[in-house]
Structure formats: C-alpha cells, structure tokens
Length: 73
Image (cartoon, rainbow, N blue to C red; front, side):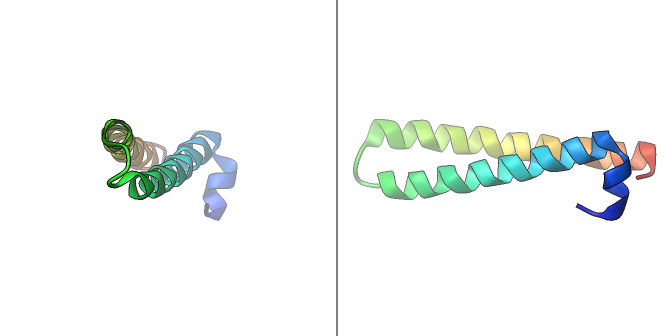
C-alpha cells in the first residue's frame, strides 16, 4: 500500500480486500492441488470457489481503478 492510500480509507479498504482475495485464492489453489486424484466432488467444489474468487479479484481491481480515477488518490 502506498503513501496516498493512508489518507483515503476507501482506497485502503479496496486494496486490503484485493490482498485478502489474493491470499484466499492462493490457499484455495493449494487445497486444489492437494485434492487432485483424491476426492473428485471436493475438487470440483474448490475449483468453483477458485473461479468465483478470480471473478471477485477482477471486480475488486476494477473498483479500485475506478476509485483512483474518480478520486485522484
């Protein structure tokens, strides 16, 4: 997080959400690798969660870009 984000709580929240989602995707990916060849049903469930998290990351990044463009921070 850069210096200007410390003065904009909205930007800080958006950046922190992006980091949280990225951490979540990393954990899900690790879990997915562990499930390969073990539990097909659970593998499919975690795979679905990975897709949903990637969409959330994309949306979060778009919101951050829009905020920065509109707010100037």
